[in-house]
Image 1 (cartoon, rainbow, N blue to C red):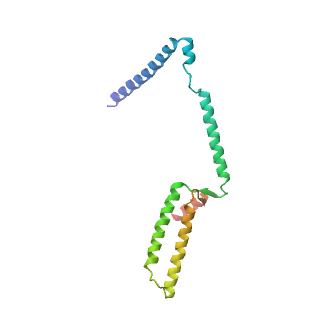
Image 2 (image 1 turned 60 degrees about the vertical axis):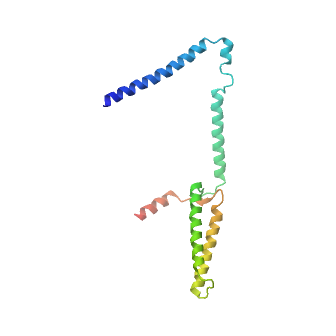
Image 3 (image 1 turned 120 degrees about the vertical axis):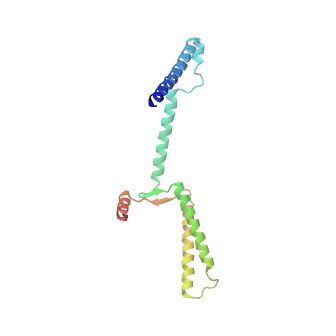
Length: 160
């Protein structure tokens, strides 16, 4: 029943336009009935539109300047890691740390064989690496190497 739906939509749109037009006319009539001093005070306390536009323009310019300044502190070939990616990495590191601790706890208290000594040393080394990575990713701003886009495309093409 497309015709009746279209008819309903046209009628409701016309009613909305009519209501908006009626409101404008009422405001205009109210202004006509005001005295000169009332008209003068009609917009008292409102900030003019040109000042609001200028304020928004200055805020945008300040934001752009601040972004450019922040980018100047980032070395070439690096980028700031997004917050959600940083938090996700910290969570993965925490899980890896727990797994490594469990493996270390499962080793005998006294390691006498060369293989058990190597395993213990490897686990302790891995644990130290994880703790260092946690220190790095615990900072508010983490810089990582930026991967060029053409390398990503080549990697994606070779994976197929």
